[in-house]
Image 1 (cartoon, rainbow, N blue to C red):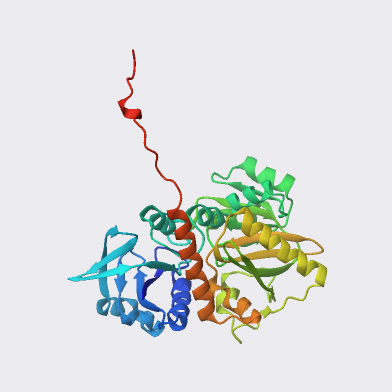
Image 2 (image 1 turned 120 degrees about the vertical axis):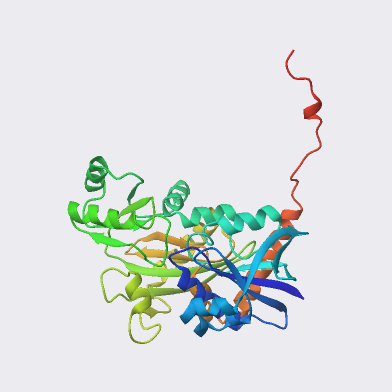
Length: 363
């Protein structure tokens, strides 16, 4: 039986969102197929395991819970397995299922470790995860592939010259957001220079790269894409906003029914809906994604890619459910994709025999 580690938490402002996603995975994964090991990484970067992590209610008092959980250490991986140790007990992880959101997990850091040691894992690889996490790099790559986006500027060191360029090339109103955060954290709409400066100051509390986009009056439409060699596209979701900006507060703290702010399928005509799905596949391929990704769009009479989420919240289950998938089936697909990719990597030539160091250097 495959030992599957469910990894979540980590040092991220989206830490709590990761806990929610992991809880859904732990509740839905088929334990007849997999030996499941929950692995929680605290905000301090400490690793824990234990059954106590499988009940989301226990996270309401994390300090108390962690006293009951088993603290674990990472030891050098062996034969394509991640090896963890708690006391005298060792845990051998055959497959890393990633339920991280945001920095230090979704952004390629964990994926890079897995790739280095040859450990199979879910989702996109190191490069794709890093590119998708950075909205600026995403836009640059998509622009190279002629994929439509709204006009944008970015900076790591805001200046009067940058403010002026934004005003001349984008004009107000504008959207200001962190380049490498999700869950709509730190996002603002601005209408003047003072607002632009304040919004950038807010972003710099979370990130060191600022993205400024031209604001357009558009529908927000989301689409999930799943696959590796064969690609599936989900139904489309339309976000119904009570406020002009769909920010973190409205996304997660809105009172009322859980999905009252979602319309599935999205209220689009057939031509636009087909275009969204077509561009979603093009984006997935351009960024060399794998696994299960959600791509967010802005839609007027045209279609614009807004953001790419390499590990979507709740694994975008609410989108796949409309196509007949259970949560368990989504997990199975993601594990199978990760295993298939790992097998393909094993067949690549990673070294060559050479006597280069025996060559005489110099005279």
